[in-house]
Length: 333
Image (tube, rainbow, N blue to C red; front, side, top):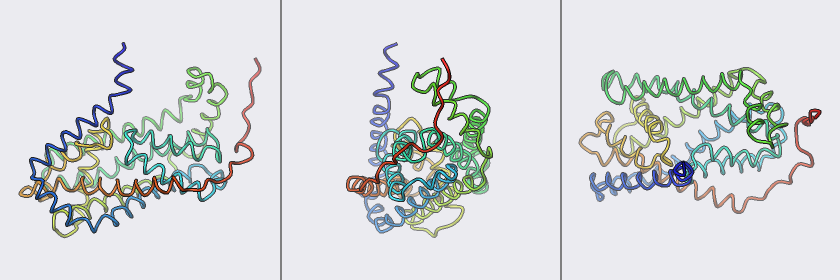
């Protein structure tokens, strides 16, 4: 059984190496010079991509804040901003995925709202993002079906993502509301014996599907679709359209679903855009389709570099004098 710890430690790095090799092969196949020309042409749009990235990240951060309830007023503005840039930089660069990014955010916000509320908030935002992905798959599927056929590869992938994200999101929602997750953690980890019950209480507090956070999460995905539509228009040398935006966003969602084990979906995103170049109207110019995820990735790296620089010089707010939230009573022995 030594293979399991080894896989946990090095598996993502191996997937990353394989993804980089696949991306390099696709670049060679498409023609490095032609691809470079497209990337240079799209360079001026990078600030707009960064701004749209900041917009959807802000929508998600706002959704998370709403789930905290009145406790969100305890968070200093500078710590809230620091949590947003840290989450973005971690998600964009480090091979830890969304889970690692949420852990980084929790470490910043927990002193102000409490560990249980932060853990419950991370679970809720994950559920909302999954369900928002499922909802966005519907118009993307309609665009793909109308333009490329209801049984095309992209349409089938989007249908699969609709069900996968929806089932997983609803499943996590039901588990969080009906299963004592905190109690189970308390049995597995001694430090959580008295922490788990409050987590269960937080997960059950408020409506199962809070409307405002749900709408904010959906708005984040809408901003992301606009971003991918903009990059498609610039890289493809075409007018920006609703159908193009939905197709580009749909390919991104499909790539994220298939390449979840690969950090940042390196190689998977490039392969998906190359595969569905025809659906985007770029069948005769595969280098333009391949440029879409590379342009997005370049903008992510620039934005993440700015975020890391801000984190390095960011002055920290004073820690609260006492932990927020009600004290946890120790049950009698």
